[in-house]
Amino acid sequence: MPRLIAISNRVQTETEGETANRGGLAVALAAGLRASNGIWFGWSGEQTEEFTGQITFRRANGVATATIDLEAQDIEEYYNGFANRTLWPLFHYRLDLTEIARDFAGGYARVNHRFAETVGPLIEPDDLVWVHDYHLLPLGQQLRERGFRNRIGFFLHIPWPPPSLLISLPDHRELVESLLDYDVVGFQSEEWRQAFMDYVTAHLDADIDGEIVSFGNRRTRMLVCPIGLDTADFCSAAHSMAAKQSQTQLMVSAVGRDMIVGVDRLDYSKGLQERFIAYQQFLTNHPELCEKVSLLQIAPPSRGDVPSYQQIRAELNALSGSINGEFATIDWVPIRYVNHGYSREKLFGIYRAARVGLVTPLRDGMNLVAKEYVAAQDPADPGVLVLSRFAGAAAQLEGAVIVNPHSSEDMADGIARALAMPLAERQERHKAMFDCIVKQDVHWWSKTFMEALEKAGPKPAARLLP
Ligand code: G6P
Image 1 (tube, helix red, strand yellow):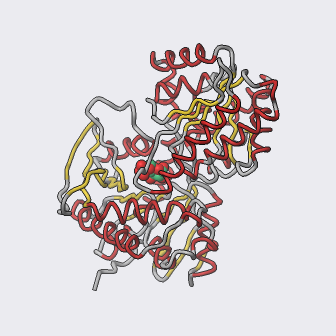
Image 2 (image 1 turned 180 degrees about the horizontal axis):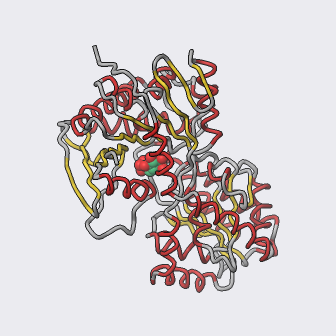
Image 3 (image 1 turned 45 degrees about the vertical axis):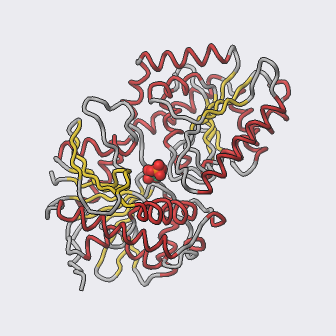
C-alpha cells in the first residue's frame, strides 16, 4: 500500500485518546493515514513573526501531522484574502461579494509556493499525494514544477462555478490549467463537474473523452465522488449519555412543541437570513401553529476577520430579534438563536429531538449537516429533512422535502408540509436517505478517490522550473 500524504489548509490535530470532535476530513483521512503510515500536512492555524518553513510534527491516535505557521501578511492575503474574499464567494455564486485584488492573488501564489517548498522534502517517490480544497488549487502544479512525478490528486469540497462567473477572475485560465497538473480531480456532484467541463470546452484547447481531460501531455480524470459521514460511528453516538441528555433536555424545554432545527457555520452561503424570513412567513401563513413550533438555529461564527462575515452576523442578530419581537408571547420564543457549537453527541440529541431539520443553503458543495440529521433519526418515528435544491446533498437525498431557498413562500410551504407529514411517508423517505448515507459513507468516499488515484497513470513527464 503506497503511503498517503494528505495536504489541506487546516489540519485537525488531536490529543492522544480524544477523538470526539473530529470533523469530516479528519475522519475520512485517518484510516488511510494510519494504515499507510502517512502524513497530514497543512497550516497550524498559528501566526508567526516571520515565515521560516519550520515544521512541527505530531502523532496522536496513530495519525502523524506536520504543520507550519504562517506570517500575518500570508494569513491576510491568502486565507482571509484570496481564499475567503475572492474564491469562496465566487465559487458560491456570490459575485456581489467577490473582491478582486492583486495582493490577494499574490499572497495565494506565495503561500501555495511555501506549501510546496516545505512539504516537498517529506514526499517520497511512491507516495500518493492528496490535496484538499480551494485554498490549494495550484499546489499540484507547484509540486510538478519541482519535479514530483507522484500520483497527485485534488478534491474540491465546495461548488465549482459556471464559466460565466469564473471568468470574472483575472487569472481564471491559469487557475484552471493548474488543476490539469493533477491526475485526479474530485467534485462533490455532477453539477460542479459539468461546470468545470463547460469551462474547459469553452476556454481551453483540451480534449474531453468521458471523464478524462487531456491537455498537452497531461491527462486528468474528473471524478464525481460525494463526501459522506462516518455513518456507523455517528450513529453509535446515539448510545452516549450526552446524546440522551441533550435530547431529553430539548424535549423538556420544547414543552410539547414541535422543534425545527438548523445547524450551520455562520456563513452567507448557508442562507440563514432567507431561512429566518421564510420561518416568519410560515408563522404568518399559519397563525394556528404559532406557539406550537419553535426554531432552534445553531450558528457558530467563523472567519470573523472577513467583513462580509461581520456584516451577516450583525444582520442575523437584528433579524432574529425583530422576528422574536413581532411574534413572541410571554411564554414562547419563536427563534432560539445560538452562536456556539456543540459536541457530536449533543448535536445527535438535538437532531433527534427535532421534528424538522432545516438545511437551506443558497449554494453548498455538499452539506454534511443534512446527512447528520438523517443519521440521527429514529427509523420508527423519524423527523423530516427540508433541503435546499442548491446543496450538493440534494443529488443524493431524494427523500428530503426539496425547497428553493430564494422563495420564502416555497420554504414556508415546505416547513408546513414536513410538520404535517404522516408517519408512513416519513418512514419511507427516511429509509431511502438512510440507505444512501450508509452505502456512500466517508470510507466509501476516500476508498473511491484513492482507488482512482492509484489507477492513474502514466505519470506526466517532470516539468522542472527553469
Ligand atoms: C468549508 C471548507 C473547508 C473549511 C471549512 C471551515 O467546509 O470547504 O475547507 O475548512 O469550511 O472553514 P475555515 O475557514 O474555518 O477553515
